[in-house]
Each structure stands twice: as C-alpha cells, then as structure tokens.
Amino acid sequence: MDDEAEGTGSVDRARGPASPRRRQWGRRSFHAPYQGPAANNGRRRDATYAALDLGTNNCRLLVARPTTDSFRVVDAFSRIIRLGEGLSKSGRLSEAAIGRAIEALAICRDKMKNRMVTRARLIATEACRAAENGADFRARVAEEVGLELEIVDRETEASLAASGCSPLLDPQAQGVILFDIGGGSSELVRLGPSRPSNYGPSHPDILGWMSIPIGVVNLAERHGGHAVTRDIYEEMISEVREYVGRFAREHPMPELGDVHLLGTSGTVTTIAGVHLELKRYERRYIDGCWMADEQISSVIDRLLLMSYEERVASPCIGSERADLVLAGCAILDAIRRTFPCQRVRVADRGLREGMLVQMMRADDVWRGPAGRPQ
Image (cartoon, rainbow, N blue to C red; front, side, top):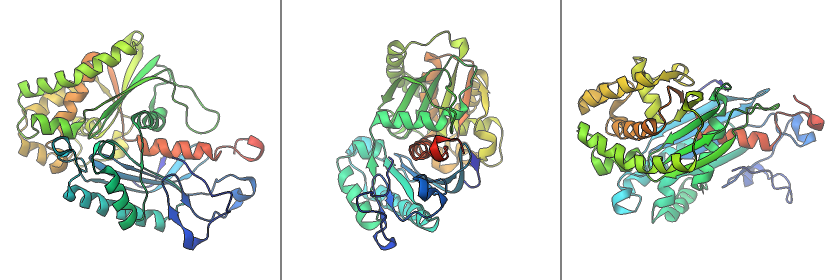
C-alpha cells in the first residue's frame, strides 16, 4: 500500500448511473456517475474509494485509489471520539458521545465529497451493536450528516481485519494469531500460512476466529485507568484470559516457534512508539515493525511504573489514551501468555484497509480486460 496521507456496493444497474443531484451516501455504496477508461469494460481502475470505520473509541476514514497491485491513500482522517464512553454501565450512547461522533462524521463526509468518492463502505462496530439507542443514533447520523452506517457483525469485523493486515504476514510462518484490540470488543483470528494472490494483495486463510466482548474502554471503566496497580493489572488479565483460553482450546495452533502474533490496534502501535522512543507518532516507523517478546514486556513494565500524568506526557500516549493504554496492555498480555510467541508484528492498518481491498477486488481493479493483469 502506497501512503500519500494519513460493504461493497455498485452503480444501480437497473436505473443506470445516478445524476450528481441524486448523489447518496448509502449503507453499501455511494451512487455517483463514473467516468473514465474503465467504464467501457465494467471495471473501475480510476475510481476513488472510501472506507469509514466508526468504532467504540475511534472514527477513522481512508480515501484511496487503486495502483497496479495495491492502492494509494489520497486522504485520511482519525479522531478519538469515545462513542462507547459509559455504555457498559448505562447501555446507551450518551448525548455527549453522539455529538462527538456526528462532528467527526461530518468531517469524513466532507472529505469524501471533496475527493469525489465513487465507492464507499461505512461501517459501525461494537458500540452501535450493543447500545439500546444504536438504531436511533444511526437515524440521527443519516438525517444530520447524510451518511447511512452499516452495523457489521463480529465475524465480518474479524474478516475485514484479516484482509487489511494480510500483507504483513510472514510468508515463512506456519501460522499467525491476529488480534484486534478495540474499544468495546477484541477480535482473535487464527490464520494459516500466507496465500499469495496473482492480482492484488494476498488472501488471508482464516482458520478460526473469536470476538471477545472486552475492549479498552469497558475494561478500563470496570477496573480503573488512572491509577493501575500490579494487582489491578493482573485482575484485568485474568478477566480476558478466560476468553483467550477458550479460543486456544477451540483453535489449537502448531508449534508456536513457527507462529507469530500480528496486532492491529492503538495498544500495539503505542507500545511500538514507546519502544522506539519516538518524539511524535510516525506511522512509517510503526506499521510493519517487529518486536521481540521481551521488548514488549519491557515497555509494559515501564508503563506500569508511570503515573497517569507521566503517561499523558508521553508523546506516543497523550491525554486521549493515558487512561486506556494499560487496559489494552492487559488484553495483550492475556493473549501473549496464552500464545507465547517470540515475535509480534505491529500493524497500523486494519478494518479500513480490509474494506478497500474487498471493494477493489470485487470490482476486479487488479485485472485488465478479459481478466488479464493490468
């Protein structure tokens, strides 16, 4: 994936391409006229795609255009909105959280319009799945922002994460445990050896998956995120490990010496940034980097010794993650103790990239006329 900046749908074939005045941001697609050389053979090599992921903690957008065998990001947006703040206690999305989400989604809408996006998928995950007022929130977003969110199930979320991270699988590994630590849930995916693709990014070989109803937001709310003692930290690990242990029993792995972990979340990117002692977060140093097991242990020990104020002052943590990072570390440690692999690869990519790959592959953008490679 070339980086220039930091559901699937199609033109309505029954009605033909919509006029610009009928432009609509839909649950599966953005109906808009498509012009260009690919129009004659039904392909979309010159199309502009967008993938939006509204999670429990973050709102993220990627806008990209296909390249010969991948895609090039032309615009991006990411903001911590804490949509699921207080959800574990009240069962509802709060008015303050809804306001933050709508503000962020309006920015995403404008970016998609400015980039003349022709294909989009807009998904929401655990917070909207779990909230009593999730349907009301979606209706309000549609009315006030003009975006229709698709609430995906957990299996879809795991599949998208695998598709987005597949380029980072070690081709020599006999298997991979992919984990996505979210705000309201965490996904575990057992992947087989990497399967190269003749057209576009490699295909993930999903052998098993589990969604754990625990993420950094609800775990921190239950145990506290400001002052975290070693005892509190171990309690968090124990809560998560019950689920991870079940996954390990249901999906046993071969010898772990031939297996590596692959993590996509703010937790692992933060740990990598602290390990590299970056003065500010820089994706080019983080995405795809390898960390040894002992290096991760060293960073977590440092974080446990920090006060809340010291975590706030860390350039790779800051005030937005200072009360959540140790909950994320506890989820990671539950995974590491169950699957004691020697290597972890860090991914600053995931659901959005998975959506882009799936949309582009569905459009055959990596094949030319008559199915030939471009």
